[in-house]
Image 1: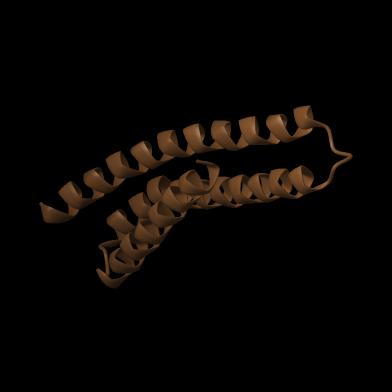
Image 2: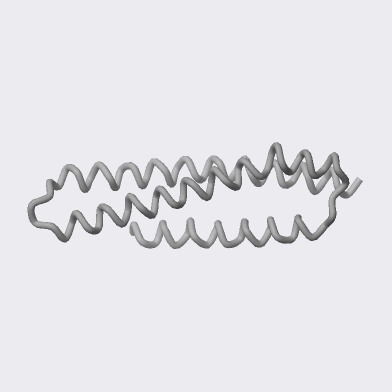
Amino acid sequence: MEEQNIIVLRDKLVALNQIREELVKLELDPKYRIFYDQNISPLLLSLLSLSYTSINFSTSASFLNTINTSKNSEIKDLLHLVYDIENLSEHVFCELEKQLDILIKLYCK
Protein backbone atom coordinates (compact mmCIF):
# COMPACT_ATOMS: atom_id res chain seq x y z
CA MET A 1 0.00 0.00 0.00
CA GLU A 2 2.79 2.40 0.93
CA GLU A 3 4.72 1.85 -2.31
CA GLN A 4 1.52 2.29 -4.31
CA ASN A 5 0.90 5.70 -2.69
CA ILE A 6 4.44 6.78 -3.50
CA ILE A 7 4.02 5.63 -7.09
CA VAL A 8 0.79 7.65 -7.39
CA LEU A 9 2.54 10.71 -5.97
CA ARG A 10 5.48 10.23 -8.35
CA ASP A 11 3.12 9.96 -11.32
CA LYS A 12 1.42 13.20 -10.30
CA LEU A 13 4.78 14.94 -10.12
CA VAL A 14 5.71 13.70 -13.58
CA ALA A 15 2.40 15.08 -14.89
CA LEU A 16 3.03 18.41 -13.14
CA ASN A 17 6.48 18.69 -14.63
CA GLN A 18 5.02 18.09 -18.08
CA ILE A 19 2.44 20.81 -17.47
CA ARG A 20 5.16 23.18 -16.30
CA GLU A 21 7.24 22.49 -19.41
CA GLU A 22 4.25 23.18 -21.66
CA LEU A 23 3.45 26.41 -19.82
CA VAL A 24 7.01 27.64 -20.28
CA LYS A 25 6.68 27.06 -24.04
CA LEU A 26 3.64 29.36 -24.24
CA GLU A 27 5.65 32.59 -23.97
CA LEU A 28 3.11 34.14 -21.65
CA ASP A 29 2.27 37.80 -21.45
CA PRO A 30 4.19 39.34 -18.52
CA LYS A 31 1.06 39.58 -16.37
CA TYR A 32 0.45 35.85 -16.86
CA ARG A 33 4.09 35.13 -16.10
CA ILE A 34 3.74 37.04 -12.83
CA PHE A 35 0.62 35.02 -12.01
CA TYR A 36 2.54 31.83 -12.76
CA ASP A 37 5.52 32.90 -10.65
CA GLN A 38 3.40 33.96 -7.69
CA ASN A 39 0.60 31.38 -7.71
CA ILE A 40 1.72 28.26 -9.50
CA SER A 41 5.45 27.96 -9.10
CA PRO A 42 5.35 27.98 -5.26
CA LEU A 43 2.74 25.23 -5.29
CA LEU A 44 4.88 23.13 -7.63
CA LEU A 45 7.90 23.59 -5.38
CA SER A 46 5.86 22.74 -2.30
CA LEU A 47 4.54 19.59 -3.91
CA LEU A 48 8.03 18.58 -4.97
CA SER A 49 9.39 19.13 -1.45
CA LEU A 50 6.54 17.16 0.08
CA SER A 51 7.12 14.27 -2.29
CA TYR A 52 10.86 14.15 -1.51
CA THR A 53 10.11 14.21 2.19
CA SER A 54 7.52 11.48 1.84
CA ILE A 55 9.91 9.28 -0.11
CA ASN A 56 12.69 9.84 2.42
CA PHE A 57 10.44 9.01 5.37
CA SER A 58 9.13 5.95 3.59
CA THR A 59 12.67 4.78 2.83
CA SER A 60 13.66 5.38 6.44
CA ALA A 61 10.73 3.30 7.65
CA SER A 62 11.76 0.50 5.30
CA PHE A 63 15.34 0.60 6.57
CA LEU A 64 14.21 0.66 10.19
CA ASN A 65 11.99 -2.30 9.50
CA THR A 66 15.01 -4.36 8.43
CA ILE A 67 16.87 -3.57 11.66
CA ASN A 68 15.73 -5.88 14.43
CA THR A 69 16.67 -3.43 17.19
CA SER A 70 14.38 -0.66 15.98
CA LYS A 71 11.16 0.05 17.77
CA ASN A 72 7.91 -0.65 15.96
CA SER A 73 6.53 2.64 17.24
CA GLU A 74 9.27 4.55 15.40
CA ILE A 75 8.37 2.81 12.17
CA LYS A 76 4.68 3.50 12.69
CA ASP A 77 5.44 7.16 13.43
CA LEU A 78 7.35 7.50 10.17
CA LEU A 79 4.56 5.83 8.23
CA HIS A 80 2.01 8.15 9.83
CA LEU A 81 4.15 11.07 8.71
CA VAL A 82 4.17 9.68 5.18
CA TYR A 83 0.37 9.44 5.19
CA ASP A 84 0.06 12.97 6.61
CA ILE A 85 2.37 14.29 3.91
CA GLU A 86 0.38 12.46 1.26
CA ASN A 87 -2.82 14.06 2.56
CA LEU A 88 -1.21 17.49 2.54
CA SER A 89 0.09 16.83 -0.97
CA GLU A 90 -3.44 16.13 -2.15
CA HIS A 91 -4.56 19.53 -0.84
CA VAL A 92 -1.65 21.29 -2.53
CA PHE A 93 -2.37 19.43 -5.77
CA CYS A 94 -6.05 20.49 -5.67
CA GLU A 95 -5.03 24.12 -5.15
CA LEU A 96 -2.54 23.82 -7.99
CA GLU A 97 -5.27 22.54 -10.30
CA LYS A 98 -7.45 25.54 -9.39
CA GLN A 99 -4.63 27.98 -10.08
CA LEU A 100 -3.84 26.31 -13.41
CA ASP A 101 -7.50 26.58 -14.39
CA ILE A 102 -7.43 30.29 -13.56
CA LEU A 103 -4.27 30.78 -15.62
CA ILE A 104 -5.72 28.93 -18.59
CA LYS A 105 -8.93 31.00 -18.43
CA LEU A 106 -6.91 34.22 -18.25
CA TYR A 107 -4.75 33.16 -21.16
CA CYS A 108 -7.72 32.17 -23.33
CA LYS A 109 -9.40 35.57 -23.01
